[in-house]
Image (tube, rainbow, N blue to C red; front, side):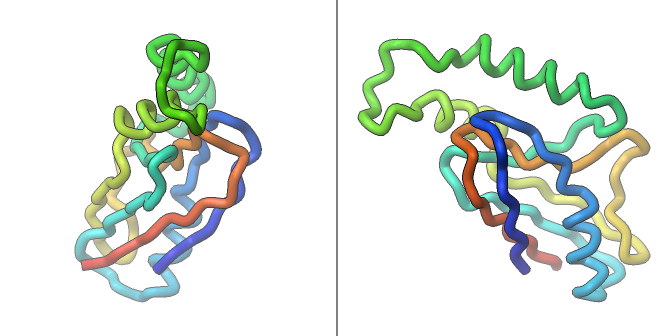
Length: 128
């Protein structure tokens, strides 16, 4: 399965939990593992708190402090910070499924991490 999202900023964390859950419900597999993979070198996926949006803001603030946009990068395309941030966050997450539901903690959500937007992005979902 694959879902598509459109990002709206250079860097942002987008809660995709509901989109993934909806894709799982269409698939109809009640139990197993859900593997979420982002096939992009300047984007990633993470699991973190989705109740308070300031957590997302704090994560982006620290990533931007750790990997600033202005530095003597050598990559000619000019998006080295996006590649570095994507490597730090990772490109995949695996979540257990039970009774057709993602087995996330009470405050957890799945976030697409955009680091070189805005763009149209793909997210691959595999169920085993």
